[in-house]
Length: 584
Image: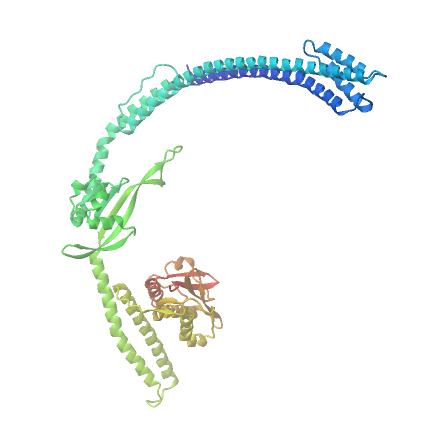
């Protein structure tokens, strides 16, 4: 029998049981309703009529007349039409006779009083008959309710036992085969490809078992044919990792050591084969260097480690191991949705490069320092040549001297920038932090380039309010950065244009910005503006600098705990900005 047929029969049986229980319940509820309706409709109305007739006799003067007489007769007529109990008809007839006697013309007071007494007696009799009927019918209804409740409870018990038996037994038709399938699939996931399922019958589970057995058989063949190849590739990869000159540590998703080559073992003073499979969290507690490596959240960080009998430098790189997930429909690998399966830590020995970089920095610092003295002497000599007491120069000589002066100034600026860069790279940058007024720093920088701006008829505009919060910075270095921004803006701005300097408060920070209205910078160059020695290609109209000013500016602002950035668009000019925290 097919599973679909079993489900239909099972749920059809449940449906019939529910209908049967509902029908029984509705039947007895209807019986109870009818009994209650009889009590309320018949006897209650009779009691209402007699009560109203009694009220007329009590409240109105006798004999009755006019509207009160019509009211009494109307209730008496209605009572005559609502005779439901044995003896009630005779009582109503006697009630009518007593009423006629009360209303008889010329009746004496004694006769009226006697008739009223008879009326009241008949009304009490009618009340007693109906009250007795209510009690009797209530007892009957109560018995009917108890009987109905008994039948309903009996029916509910039968239905409960049937449904309980169904609930206990029926799910086994589906759950038991599914459990076997689940256990078989779990064995397959453990690479037990010899697992097989046996189902007798012609339902879908039997067909699925046949397909499962076929799949397990094919997987077993594939495992046997590819196991040696996979093992060979694994050994090959392990050999490559072991022979690499960089220290390599691999962790799985459970933070267990997955691979650990010889170089890493020598560096961390650990035995590689012994730590494979161990929990890295436990090893970190006993090895400070391993703790530094695994706890470091910054990727590609330079670390100083004592190795090879000297202080050596290593570049730490962290990479995640991702396992590609599969699209259930297309059945293709999708690496972009791969899940993390572990991490790889690589320590590259960059001591040689670090030493070369330090030698380069020292060489630049030495050469820059040595060049600064003769360049200053040349500038002094040029200044003396301008003195007419030394001698007069013709126009061509003055022009040559001016060119020499400009080149000397440019060389002096480059040597100063190289010296600043050497200080930053060697960690010898000295900062003198003081609380300063940001507006005064901006005015000082503007005064430094005002002569240069006047030569090109460029207007310098300051946008800032008074009483800005003070900042805790090195005034000289901060002003140097602002002067560098202004010099670049003046260099690339057309004549008779404007450069806007803005100093504003922005969320616990003071933001400095210099905006020019030149041709702007292409987006492809904006990300590299603050790199060392990078220069934006020019059309030859503007003399390019050394490519160090913005890089040094970035280092100065970073050392002061600030951020630096640029905003630019072609045809709209550029806006160079840096932000420094407000002094606490």
